Image 1 (cartoon, one colour):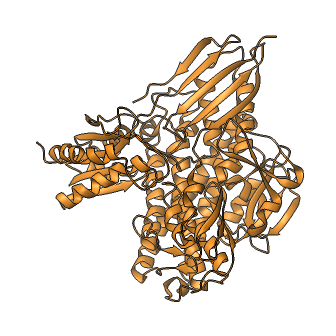
Image 2 (image 1 turned 135 degrees about the horizontal axis):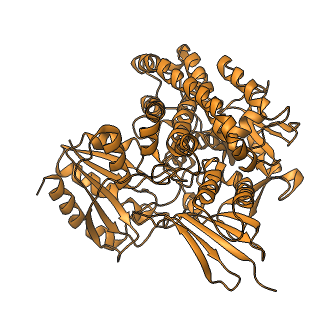
Image 3 (image 1 turned 90 degrees about the vertical axis):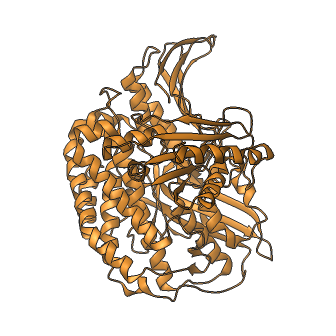
Length: 143
Length: 479
């Protein structure tokens, strides 16, 4: 299984960019399994552990709006959290510890500029989707 | 006069919706007060204005990734009130069934994933091992039980309402689809394991309580009022109950209050340092009317839970209060486990009810009232949705009163109490830092109704001197 986990909030403008990329990815290659979630959660470790490759898709607060980054994700032990969300690294850490396996993974982010309540992306983020899609697709294809 | 010193704990930074803890010290380095800040942006209510109230269940379910079911149900109930209909019995039962399943999965996350590492390994244990993986190594059965129980609750939610909480499952006037016979049989087959896990966790945690007497004394042990929803006979009712407030001695001070009248009983103070509202029991004023909601409050408020195993546990739980309400916020943990058992027992009973398979699920109507309030017990406490609509059903005003906000005053006092005990002389040890966090974690606050893009910051504590200079810091590595 090649897996894309899209994180974000669809009613918070650019925070929903991960979902848009994930849907484009699924349209491009129906074999890619998509998980859409507002937050990375412990149960995602199970599906991550049985995936060949995983791409996490998210918005970022770092960088100029529309800036696309792809960084490898290494498993890491979760910190005790007050709140509920994990990081992609922590999901991989749980996958390795609980299910014996953490597949190669990458985090593809698009820097957002607008995180207000809205159901649309800002133009810079919209324009960055093809590049983010290309990076995600190349990684999942093993290229 | 010199300015008081402050200690700032900045645990999780998300662009908005991040929480920060500030501990104010006096000139002698002793704790004067503390605050749990939330800088969450509250624009959601404005964002909803102008939309149809019929859209709201699906829209508000997208506020929160942890308790979408609660928003879905409170919103659908507010819609029922605007339609002025009585929904079919089967729809009412299916909503209650879904609410109980969500309670199980959410409480499992809180107890097993977030809190158990502290509870099982110790608050002052090595930080690098005090996490879910450390728990899996030290107490593998506990870690495994947590994963299984949460997955069970999640599967029921998916079976009833669709994989991603189908936006149109709960609607004003009812629900869209029944439980299928296959779904019912699958839940029935998995239920014994879930019940066994709940009983095992309760037995384990009750056996551990003796080792945590100091935490029970210092983690938010103070008098407040409590709010929860109960049936007319006082039995806990998470979905269709009316409001009951009890005071710090356990006396009922308001009972069978229709949620539609909540504003007569609940005032909302707004503090400049937090976007969270600080609700209080209006007859007593602010801040004397501070009350708590959630599992601890529900067990303090209810006359009974209404299922046999859980009622036996309730009797034991009450002993901790010595005849009155259980005051320590540390016992949110035990209350959560008792509620999990209760929810599973009730799910077990409800599975025998043929109404869950009924297709008579919707009451049809147009807008008949200009205002509607929907309330239900979310995992973290009583949730209110209040809508006002124009004659064509478009929202003109939205007010959401969430559980975490209602615990705001109590969370502040909890932080102050823990800090007073464990912070002195202007220094914070790792163990003290962790206890302050754990005190907040006992309430299981949820700030998911915010953005969470990548770029979280590490936690740090700063000690700030009278001149604003940072005297020292305690931090944790980030990603």
